[in-house]
Image (cartoon, rainbow, N blue to C red; front, side, top):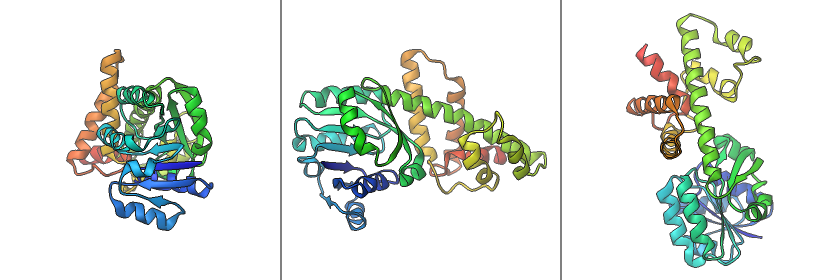
Length: 286
């Protein structure tokens, strides 16, 4: 099955690589052409300078981009190359409104659209262990599922178009609260003069345990943030969640507060720091 992959950032590059490793015929596009050429050197496949050329004759098209405008631009640039019956899977964390609009727009062309944001970060992409939350028609999700399994540990069809993005908003809302709580706990432990390793040994097997504690608490205590999911991207995701909440009436007071804390981190120059850098804000203010 011929596939195309649009966007070779820290997520897309390894995701497309897993497709190639599973034997898929993969053509790639990246806004910076040198990145696409590098991918071709690392994997079997082809690259082209224009999205329409990459998606031509592809049965499955995957995208992993930055934000709504990036997705809109790439879809517009791909339209002339899309063939009827293809399925376009967007792994970008974008707005539910855009997902619904693209589902309708591509549907008029006979092309399926699945909004399929992912969770698991760069490590999940590199290890092929992402969680994928899908919105769209069941038939389109099932057509793309075998290919998505190349880089995923879990794929769940949430509901109609836009519901994948809404689920990702839930994911980020939960993470924001957990990271703020963990930051305060690590900060408190340091201020109290506790041995953080012993503290984590004591509490990580109980109700306080989380993925963030297991993977980020020690680096937070060590003031290390040059890795992981960037604060800039988290603020983009929370912007989407908060905008949707204003539309549906959901009350997100803690999420709105943590979003402002991330704005403080950006003001400290931490836009590219990992999201666990919330603790650095507390340490500075303390």
